[in-house]
Length: 362
Image (cartoon, rainbow, N blue to C red; front, side, top):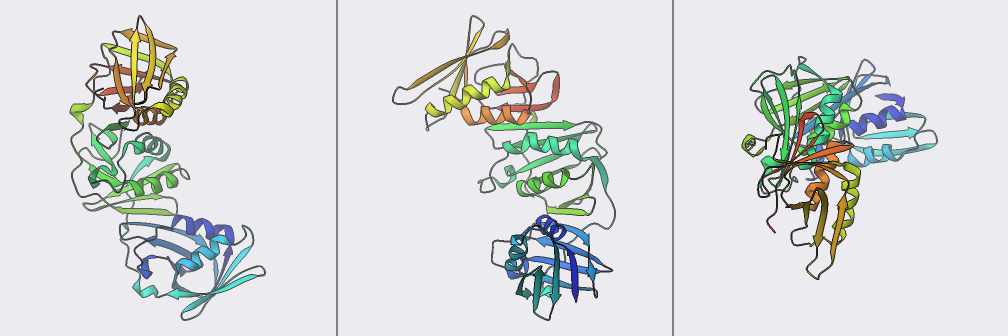
């Protein structure tokens, strides 16, 4: 079998299907191709997530092959223009682009597992809204190496027709709600954070995304791309009781950039032990401060509007910065009920996106 396609199209398809295992399993370390009627389908799989996309090619015959990881990396390293040619033999493939060529071994296509993708289309969601929601919450998720794997992902939950995206590492929680979700009430699943990152990239290239959910996996489809992932089996913790009411006895409205600039300077001094910053309000003047164990101290005033009585409170400097950045707003509102209870950060006139930061006792 011989096939020819624009190099940039092949590179883009390989980028989509680049889920590769680091376990050393040869069948999962490359990219699987199926060629039929001048359409090449690229599939990558790492045992938990899979991505599939297709491009138009000129092929001498139908067939399948499993590109090895070196073959995939070689193609990605080729110059960005021109036509890519692949001549497939029994256990090798000759890859040519202009005057450049290489002969690379092939893995056995028979060893590549059958990846389950739903045959029928699922429920359609607006891609931009879902992508924005994921961007707002993903930073709050725990790392994949966390001792609590269920926190290394984003919860999708439909309540009263509203799709809620929730992530937490137990020190911080982020929630973004999409109104009028076509997914049925009671839908609830947790998507691993690695799949979340891939989904965000896919959503940037489409207006709509189709979602199909089963008991053990979920499939997202945008155009020619399909992304499938196993779900995190453990139950996501109950989060409702820790979300403070929007209206609080004390509220501070501040420009996000001014707060982030001040926090960036405070991080230089903040102790490595608890990385805390204190927010204080005296006679209507808001300031942020921190102190190191050796006595270095920084206090910076903020141009902020104060409503009600705002008690002094302390939070982790990185959690505060990440929460404000995730909202992507020029102005944020910090709502404080009690210095030892969760702190709520929102955008003005928007209660659908919430960032909650746990306070630190200092």
